[in-house]
Image (cartoon, rainbow, N blue to C red):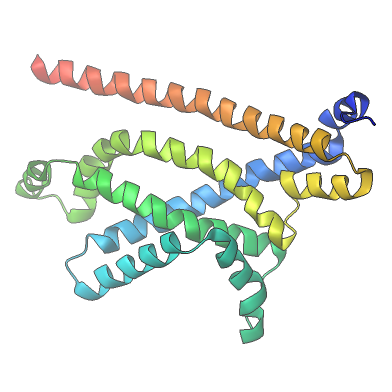
Length: 230
């Protein structure tokens, strides 16, 4: 009995059907991250608001989406909402679910980065007559961004793998296409190994990019400190 089929493994390693699934995983990650960052920033600002209602809504959102599995959220969006007349395509449901879920985590990362900026920086901006928006844009966020980068990079790494959960609603990303081929070819180990290799490749490439980004901003921070000392 043949346990491993090497010819089958190599034939699907560069299979166009699988490669299209890899591309889908990549753009799904990028678009979900952009949506999650935008919504996460809004939620982070609401979380820091002095208005009790805004803070309460933000806390509830974070509590809800961090406390329930993404799998459940996707099923609710794709199968439960249509019963109330709200319908989404597979792609729309996948992007919405990923972005909403990611925003809850990114909101806390962004809020922590903003809180890490000394309050004196904000007061100095107000003393110079700057508006709150200008202070946030020109003083707070450039400094907070350096703090946010490492955990944000880890979130991207996790999101690359989390996209596989969208296979439950038939989103044809890498894992879903792997499962389809398994049902047709009955090569379970070989095809899952191919999928694992591509997930490892994607996360490894991102890890390299993340290190370059952290190094670049780390150097700019050191340069800024040297300039201040002078």
